[in-house]
Amino acid sequence: MSKPSPLKGADPVLVRGAYDAAGNEVYQAYIQATHDRLMQIGDEVAKWDFGTGAQRILQNGGKLPQAEINGARALASGPMKEEYMNGDQAKKEEVEAEARAMKAGMDQYQQLRLNLATAYTNDQLSNGFMRTSEGEDVMMIMQNKARLSRKQCPEGVEDCDNKNEIGIMMKDYQKIADANAAMAQSKAKLKNLEKLNEQGLLYLPEGQIMDQMTSLQKEIDGYQELLDSNPVKWTSINSVQSMIKFKDQKSKDNLSATRKAIYDRAFNSHPDDNITFRENKAREAVQNGILSIGDKESLIYDPMFGNKSFYENMISHIVGEGEGGRTYRDFGVTEEMMLAGDMDFDGKISVEEAENIAQSIVSNEDLVGQELEDYFVQHLKNNHDEALLAKQDILGGNEQFDGQADETTIKEDKTTLNSDHFNEDGHFNYEPQSQESDEGGDDENEEDDTGDFIEGGDIVA
Image 1 (tube, helix red, strand yellow):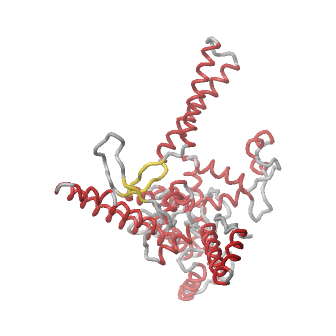
Image 2 (cartoon, one colour; image 1 turned 180 degrees about the vertical axis):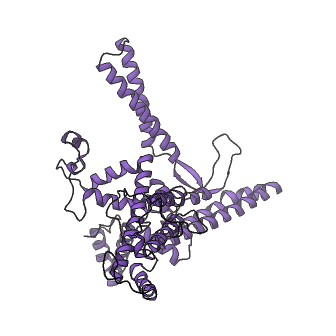
């Protein structure tokens, strides 16, 4: 069922009265056409999303919304024109400089919207960026609305940084973060004070205790009032540009190269070598070539291999996707513990509850770092094991590789196998079923001539 138009349609009584007065079909056709257009606009507004916004920007070559152009014209033909006409030579030069700066700012904003639309259409933007409030706010500049604003100095201040520069008004995320942090501290102090008071551990007059509690509650109410006011601030185009985050392609490429080196090492090994997965080297590769240089949000929310991200795989694992679902008891959660997290009190983990669990993990710096490391190492081990299985298939499936083919045959089969097992992007089509790391360590006596390092990077294979 389609959403109703947010725009009020023509009053049928008034439409009918106008038609009766006109007494002809021309007016009826006009009324119907106007009504249809209003409904179309309403549908367009209701259906707007990032995709449609990006498409429209690309279709018109990035042209700014007409409302932006009209606003600039009104400014240039009004206050700026008046200052120019009534000013001396110095003032005229100042206004001319402002006009040039305004034109440059509008051109920069136009290019920003065009670049953002292109990046969205090409699937280059990080999901970690787009899921945040800041990311959503930035993405909204693709709407066909006026957002540009000139920086105004505080009242009573003649000059200030970025005076009259073109930018946009955005939420003041730093102020919001500071207010949330301060409010959390005040709530913790109040809760602790209440607890100590209940236990009789506050040796203060009753009135003084109440005064402290009242003061803390006023602080909390003040922070909440600030948050409810939705504080905004002027933001330069350069600052908006710096907020945009792209998918971490470098880390993805490093993982792909490491995976291929590990796969090739296992597949090209001699059957008698009884080759093993070198977990320590794999962890070193993940730590040096991915985690230490990668964008954490992208590593969590963007697919680094396959079609699902670490976060999506985590959600699937928590809810038991494809396994009939999971309960809290499957994770050793008692009924008492369950009361805090089981939102619908059915004992089963819903997708919404899984989101809460996953968010508690990714918000823990130490925990998510280890989970990511184990996740990527398991992916590398899966490819090592798959290579050995593929090699067994080529050699007849004999675990001891009896009746080996000659070297030429193996090379020819290897080429065929690689093309079958890798997708068009060069990535192996396999997703890990577990994020647990393998307990098998490196073979200390193993020779080092089987692809220890990938040349020219921080990747250890």
